[in-house]
Image 1 (cartoon, rainbow, N blue to C red):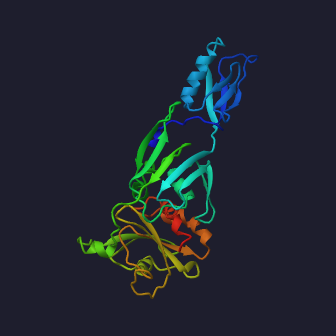
Image 2 (cartoon, helix red, strand yellow; image 1 turned 90 degrees about the vertical axis):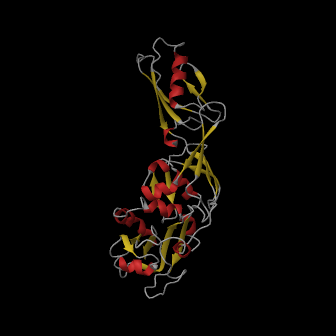
Image 3 (cartoon, one colour; image 1 turned 45 degrees about the vertical axis):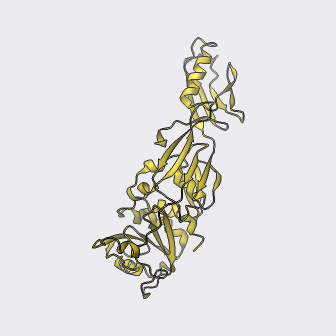
Length: 327
């Protein structure tokens, strides 16, 4: 999987070169910087090309060069300041294009939530506005350049549904500079619950997850075709004076691998309706917002722990972020 790939050095990387066995008088340990042409200036040697090499390859190369200059050429090379990376997202994302990612991003979809850490596939998709309703989450393709001067790529398939449903973090790889993410369109039509129930034997019960401002957030067991409002009531109902009643979000993973996000009003007296009180499917997530939308994220960790079948509610919200501004 992509996590096993080695980091490839490039322009903008900050390195620390330390000599291990030189006397204090000769020791020239210190920082070095790879500039835009892929080279760096190193002590005793001068200009050396390091771009395109892994850290291990660069260490081996420098040590080979220093054997010609020093009696003791042992050294330690560390990456201390990684460069911002640029990745390309194409296919079924809201805003395809080239994006610059760093070790700290800000999510606008969840009211300016600060996200720290190395950029991952999910954070890149979120920055591109989320996936479209036609995206096939089962067969996302990641192309990554291999080390060396010759431009070669390897391909890996990523199953985002496994990440969402089983919590498999292998399916959310850390991205490297130059990665290309291709999200294909689903080839199978979306089969809604009504059509599905006419072709297979419906199970006696389904499990949906109701999170946010309800009395008992977490998994709820109901009968197939149960309307959304009934699931909210099964979770104890909305919390008085805290729930946002003009909008409830239904997040669904369709059978063809697509993900949809639908906003409906929370009307406890509404009859079953595809638009106002839609029937639920096994694995659906119902989000009851706080009246202050920005405070929802404070509850994600607390209400996410008891969930079964969904590994990360936050991941679902971020992948479905493209529908946030359209509903």
